[in-house]
Image 1: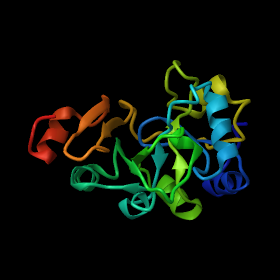
Image 2: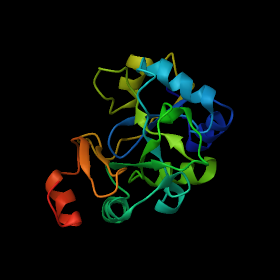
Image 3: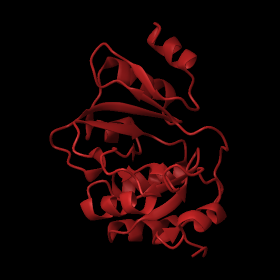
Length: 202
């Protein structure tokens, strides 16, 4: 499994409906094309994740994010301040965008990772899932060897490359309701930093 797989190999696997594990700017991620319902179901199965819980999504830019979600002023301010970076922003899903990753809900959590190869991949193949590459409830993986140990037999491909920043997982911030911003999960971007951009307390 731990071969000299490239991002070009990963693109081919994703476009053929497979699931790949890739290094990100925080931890290893488990990626499938967001619009491929079968591949996203496989992500849920690999992680043994509650299928009622939505999966975060990776994009290459704010422009790509705005094709799948509606960004209000607060969401756009946070994206402009912290993207690319370790913050996922929850916004209302556009009605034109359909993905099993939304778990039937009306919102999507979107992140632009601070990782050039991953951004390039999103530009080439489209929006992909951005959940951590580990079993639900188990530690996040920072190396390909750790991914192999936890879920190696379940994924189609593991790209063995360094995770650039061994830190906290991404912060998740819900901006889906106009006038309300709340932290769903604490992470690399602090509440103080978010409040500094918004100019008000959360």
